[in-house]
Image (tube, rainbow, N blue to C red; front, side, top):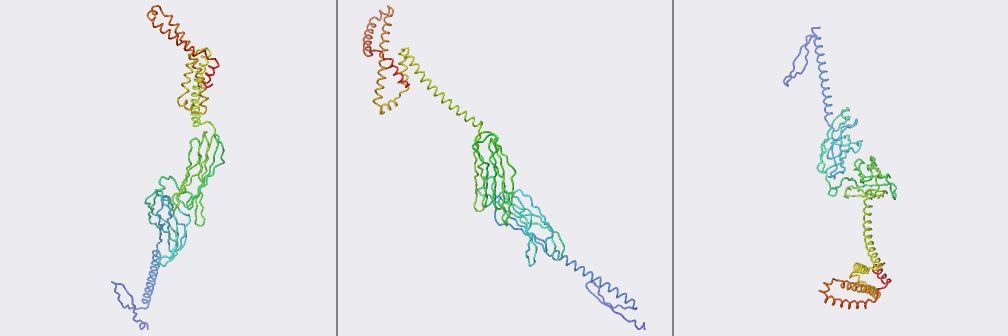
Length: 474
């Protein structure tokens, strides 16, 4: 029976030989041999199936990993800013899945502009791209140009952590944002302006301590300045530089910065406290600085601060010079007046003394000297045209008559003296000039008698005193 059961057994297997397969008939001469062969083929089939499954899983994972790579999209406002104007740069990160962990990036340092994060927190959301929903994360960066011209923003590297939607695995990637170019310019009206703010609305509060009518050396004046600008961080408001005055020490405290954000509207505020310490007396002008800002769409705006006038009592070099000049002027004027007064008093005293000692020649000389100094043609003309012309004329005639009487008296007296002196010459001279002398003597006697008839007598002392006082206006 066993021999009858022994039969022929056929199996088919495939073998790869130059992409050709063939079938070969295998004959088993015993059941044991057939069982071993079947077991071997079963194991081979399971091994092939396992390898196919592993390969498929590996291919699926690779396809999931390389199906969508994380991306970063860069955008900015299409405007050319002025120097100092804020430019918002937006970086949008996209992943297939959701973010898992903090995103890390550093802003590069630039010599032509300043970069700052608009916020420490990103804006998370989603975005549909090519029929696939992706997770998005938006970071805003503020750019502030510090010089005019073309400004290049270098690459910014983002380190992200996310969970892939297809594989469910946590992955880490590094993505790089493309560089950007920004052109900034400086308007003509801003050239020459040292510091300014770029904002649509700027408010300035300038508060001083209670003023005094007079200050003393060592007094203190306090001042608080508050500058508020819309849509501008406090750190980007230029520092305030107060005017420095010689003679007053200025102490400036560290400014206090404050930022406010309310429903998308931001505002920066800087508070500056200043203390003025008076060192020297004098007159000072404090304040009066100019705050400048550029209003977008409105141009250059300026606000001149209040001036405070401070008068400090005491002696200072500046006041000393003024006082010295005033004293010199007063002294010079006093010397001139003293010289005029002394000169006038000297002539009057001399004339009065000449009248007292009856020195008529000196008296008449002083009278004419004073008359020549005090009377000019223009003055005489004005006197003649005055309303008191007749009265003044009579007064002048009386004074002139008194002076003429004195002159005639003196002339006649001197003529007699000269006649006596002529008669005392030597005998020899008398012989030579006998005829001439006799002729001159006769003429002198004749003239003397004529003057004596005119002069009558010497003017009275009261008339001469009146003449003296009228001439010198005493």
